[in-house]
Length: 424
Image 1 (cartoon, rainbow, N blue to C red):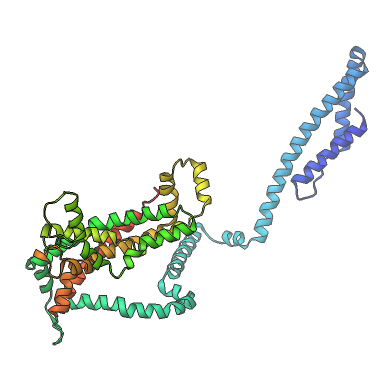
Image 2 (spheres, rainbow, N blue to C red; image 1 turned 90 degrees about the vertical axis):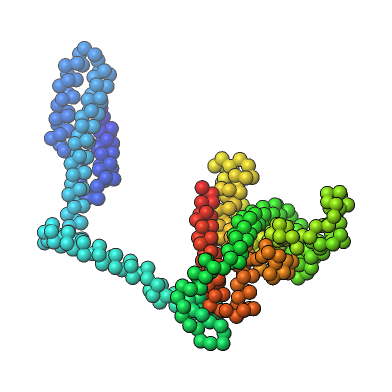
């Protein structure tokens, strides 16, 4: 094996050692090692030269030298790694004060300091999560919110709190409120039969019109969103118009008129479905179904617009990613992509529908009168208006309002829990 080849192998060993080490470590063969390798090769070559020839001896020489170099390289690299680890440890202990500090403490002292630091970290985290800290940190934002918050607190929150307080008093608007404890609530649930009828009608309204109108709003918004912008705008106006129409009750009064000239009676008699006119809003068994139909017709309001806006904000790339993940049809797109992406709008629409369903009053008053026949169209709000605006028994009216408020809050919490499961 020629000297040049040996020199190249030794240089490769030098380069490999330099790549692994940050320190200057020479792992080349010294003269004694080369002499040992040379003597081994020479001894073997002298014995075999006569039998196999010079070429065979030279090939065996190269093979023996390569094996020896591999063993030498492996041994030197192991030593180099050990030196690196020692050097790193020494350097860390020398530069990091925590090592020198830890050596001066016992295990018990270190454990005590660790527990104290953990408690301090918990106190800091608790302080940062406090309302006072967040308000102090975001005082500019709260200053900008102050005008709206003051108005909202003055005309919404404060009246609700005052109404809850007045519900435990007798207050006739002429004398100072007199505390009477739970008397109003006892009368409300045990002695007021009209309230029980009104509560039953309100719950029927809420259970029937609430979910149906909510689903209709979402379904119509989803369908309309597929059209071109100009067509979408026109259809949105068509569906939204009934909720803001000032003459809606007059139109339905003509439709539900009790004489034979009423549109519904005239149409049914012409088709032969009835023989004589029906008293739609004077017959107790027809009043509530008719009011539910009118309520559904008027239900495409603000919640419907919020769904249209929410569908416009869904990122189109989500549908492409969903298709790659295995979504195959439009219903799966709606459940796994569209609805999770518009949860804020879904929550807003749910709150609006809950409010409309429980606060039904104008429809009943305009079409069935107040009071209606056998109180068939009475709701909690009409009962509240009777005591608050006609009889001026504000304490009892406040008790009715408090019950209605608790019903809305409880239903709202239930709907929030259901909406969290959308997309699962």
